[in-house]
Length: 140
Image (tube, rainbow, N blue to C red; front, side):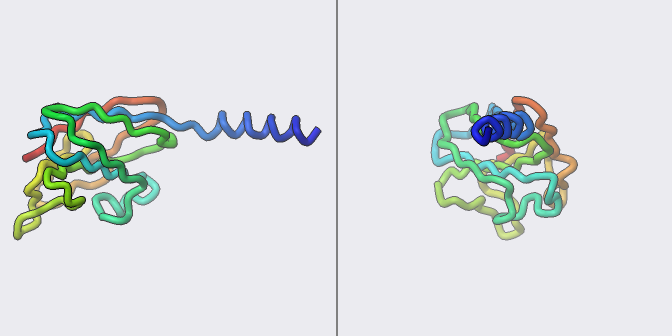
């Protein structure tokens, strides 16, 4: 009886806890140097958007040329916002100039282009309820 209950519980839990893949397409990578750093932020902590160390998940991929297709696996359903940069020199930092503007290619989900400050979570929000694909163009 315990075995049956355990199996049934696992089955029901797996139906409830859905996880999805997010395919990230980047059509304009400047070169194949370094990598692509992807910071994923959850709607559960919107105010942390773009803050280093407060990401829901961080994924790094090798730059593959002038474009890239990257798969972010096993994200629970929910709302997310992505901030990415092309870490050309591989130093694991988004290098900026003296006023804080990135010197390496960067981008946000929904291709939001910041004006005087970083964009807000809701501007970059992606609703993930099934496997999905998004495109982010880098700003160099």
